[in-house]
Length: 342
Image 1 (cartoon, one colour):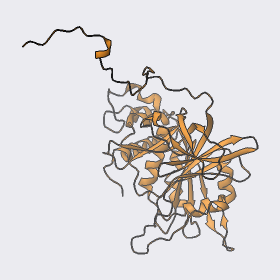
Image 2 (cartoon, one colour):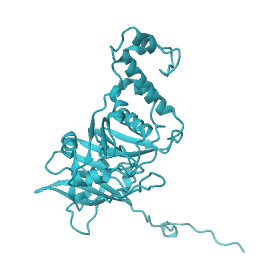
Image 3 (cartoon, helix red, strand yellow):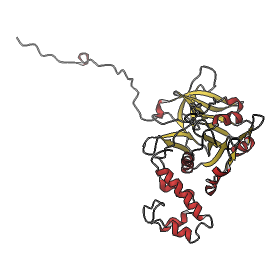
Image 4 (cartoon, rainbow, N blue to C red):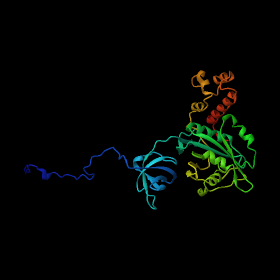
């Protein structure tokens, strides 16, 4: 027996409720126009210590990154913008919602073949390469690599030689005379103090300076002398390997007392890869030699027989210092293309 045919009305239609709400989806993100600007001082396991302005000077805020930042990395020195509780009171946590434009970026890679670069510090204007004259022995190739990284980042280099009470700095400094790298020498005084500290302080005043050096060179000792309340851990050099123990485990920005300047202490490094540096850019940091590259063959590495710089310098280009400056350029180029550290 056939079932009777019936008409359907709206009561027969079951409508599933919209669990997501009626608000239309959009790709637009909030602009956070009321976000508070700040500067990242330290990074520790997903938390950021940020210095922000307040009604009574500056104070520090603990913050986390907002989801809308995606995978954008945040490093010490970055200018950031925060929302949420920016009072800095204990137990509060703000959110970083925007990242400012970076003026400079100091990078390094694990080695010269590693395609992954690591940003160490942002918005610094001076790279301070700290090296001991003895205990441990200086590593010129590592210093050269730091200089290349500084030039590539648009930062000015400063060479600080420590432990001059153990070795004469003259022979070592002679190697860097052609590069015209400014330098300061420090030594332990008879009273246990650090002689040359005022010269270092003067060179850092008004600057944002990143201190880089391999372990055991006295970098943390120098930072503690410049910023006594920093209390950076110090270590000793192994008498067998000649290497120091890593004492600084993370980068941190510290204000110089009484000075309009900052120092950024970084963990000790044993290598400084330059895979991110294009060798052709290094010559731009030798403005006295760059005009001589006009006659170089296409793709010239400036360290080959066909390079026009040899004839240009021999003809008086770059003045009396031309030959030594050319050798310095090629020394840095070879540093960039070297396969391994010393």
